Image (tube, rainbow over all chains, first blue to last red; front, side, top):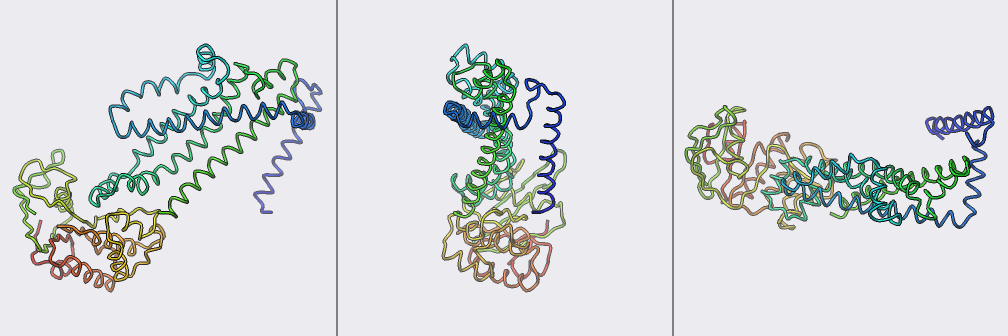
Length: 250
Length: 181
């Protein structure tokens, strides 16, 4: 094991120890549950089928919101890059969507569409502007000289996409994914806490808060953090793999 | 190809004033001149990247070029860089062999001289009416320069070509006529 890995593990162990000591000194489980209590709650949740169904439901909706937001954001950025006027006309909408607080979004969507697809729509509106801005920036970063080269050598649109545009977009799409997966999970769960669609992670979180079951709140939060980290890594892996394959195949 | 009385300014700086240039079919010319004299502007006008402020132009439809910078797709192999264009694959292989390029090697891992030769191969693979070489031998050692020059002459034989260089020997070796800017 190398030194930096050892330091990371030691840092986590110290944090857990500090947390345990703080919980023991405070001695009020409803204010600060100890790591052992949280672990117990996590095991209890893990043994309950309802929790897994709820987690599956929440994660699916959040991921669907993330994917649709990413797709629409990339598509709109492509249109904005191609048609300057489109960029001008769409920019007020993007600016408004970016500035609206999550809570306002949740209430508006709750009034319009009800609680069913709430986290999906909230995630969509949180993720879409991030992908839009990053993709547009990536497209604009393409070197004009490379486009002149493409013109001289009469490259087809497909060739331009594969050899010029996509390589320029790689780092921008990676940073958009990393930035927006975390936001998608945070906003999606926040939406579920406010809208309380039945049997979702947000619903369980609100339920735990109602009964001052702090260890359960911590356990659900830990689950969300783990899901967010897993899908963030998965997204990075998929994007990197896609570009790796692209460069190998062509 | 014909440029007649071309004028071009950038903001208040006049780069070209009443500049004229003819390149007949099959003629090889070399353009020489100090930096900032407008050589790249002339080439940009010929390639259609810039429009002259005034003057007449008669430009060919099919142009191929080695740019001052390599302008290669760095993440892909040499072969992809050349064959992604509407190029003849067997011709590409032939030129790669003559220039001593490993066509399977990723461009980003190549040396400056190797990249220059890939850019040269890409230019020669295209069947064009006019070939433009903007300091095409820049960064090559003397031995490779000689090989590259032989290859350029072989594949542009009977076709119009413009060779921009600072080296009088290269200009004399390549061109039927030298134009000073």
